[in-house]
Length: 252
Ligand SMILES: [Ca+2]
Ligand SMILES: [Ca+2]
Image (cartoon, rainbow, N blue to C red; front, side):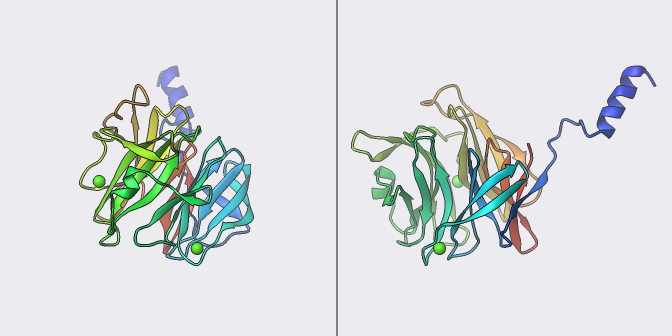
């Protein structure tokens, strides 16, 4: 064996392979199912499972350990899929008006053409807000079945009156007859992660683009290792089905 082959073999044995290594993430003080993580600085938001889910906050110890702070949204209906912006916006999906589900931002329902047009069973399932709060990467889904029979991603731009209107064609290379949802837009908004469900299997995908007003590229799958959804933190942190519930994992 040549010297270079010996070095490569040694690096592989030490774990320096190119494939990301998935590791569990623990929220100390919380024992339930963990879903829909959203990282902002040292804060981690997530929600519990089920039709009455609540949103929790945890504080970062390190990449793989967080300490529960407590509940931050806990109505008698569904509260989940939190999203925060650097500008201080706090948005989440609410089942309080179901049908349809609505997106609540800063205590009020989000308004725009994507909300005035859809009617039950069309609904807004979740959103990821941009860092500057100017755009939503929002899901419109058809909740006539569980899971929905249709789900697609849209970019909505803030208007002078504070409403958000959809920019056409941004997701033309991404939306399919399968279910696309759970956007995770990166700072700069030139890269996005999202979840695609085919049949009963969910995987996480990535796409890029050249400018904020341009369509995203054809996507490629990045997490295909069991039922995984809802990435955050640059596509690194997500939830994954384990047994009868969901737990958090980090891949980078
Ligand atoms: Ca609730
Ligand atoms: Ca779709």
